[in-house]
Length: 244
Figure 1 (tube, one colour):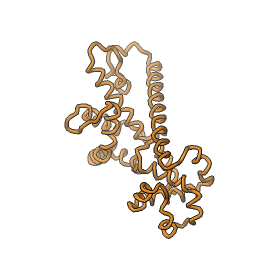
Figure 2 (cartoon, helix red, strand yellow):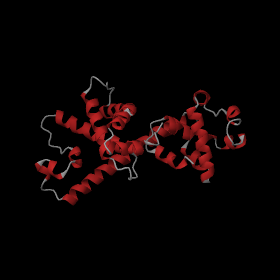
Figure 3 (tube, one colour):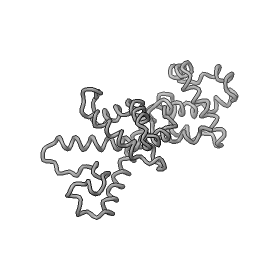
Figure 4 (tube, helix red, strand yellow):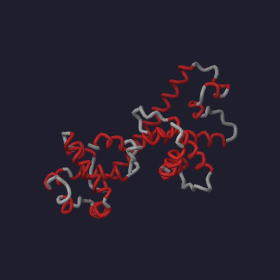
């Protein structure tokens, strides 16, 4: 589940709070390992693989450099940094490669390798922006594919969500609260995973929403629970507007 206070933690890190830095690295270690494994296309182990050490340093770098005012989520930014650093590492391991390491794009001008000097600064920045946008677009597409497959396990298609999503913000917030309750209550969550349906009998006594409304919003509520329970970092941005 997304920690909706992640931005506050990052601000503490950037103010020099090392305890906050260590806490975030420890908390999101599963995320770091997942991104590393995806990039390496194999299982990785914390104490055995150099790639994990590189990914940890990259995540640490992302904590320092992330701008909390930008629209892109921290997790998509951190994934990009981790992937780029690992790609740099893979290239360094190959003999005779002439590729420019993308990690150099984030360095200060006086730290860049000498071969970048002749490149016009504006041209260089455009290349950085284009690469970043391409990476983010691919991440979004991959996440949507994964989410779509997960929805199908519950008999839900994207077209269902477009049709059944509440039209009013109050109704969306209400559905969000129900979904959050289901995700956070283990018995409800297990019931949903086992039966692929909502625990309506219990919910109608615990929430201020009628059974009829719960049934009508079933697919939308389940779709939100799936976002809570999965590592859908782009989609979780959507949840931030539904806290109420």
